[in-house]
Length: 74
Image (cartoon, rainbow, N blue to C red; front, side, top):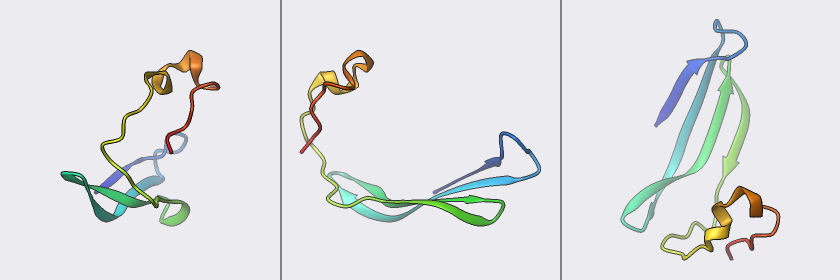
């Protein structure tokens, strides 16, 4: 999966976000690696480990007022 779009500041430059290293996660698949290319050059990567599904999360996790106080998932 890729998202290819013009750069917000310079539409002549291409932003290319690539989702790779798909792994089974519950009943679906999730990209464990994300790569961001700016004008053809790799500028950012994210790699995810210990991917878990089906976890119950405290609703406060999604309340912006409580972002600084909500417990993180373990």
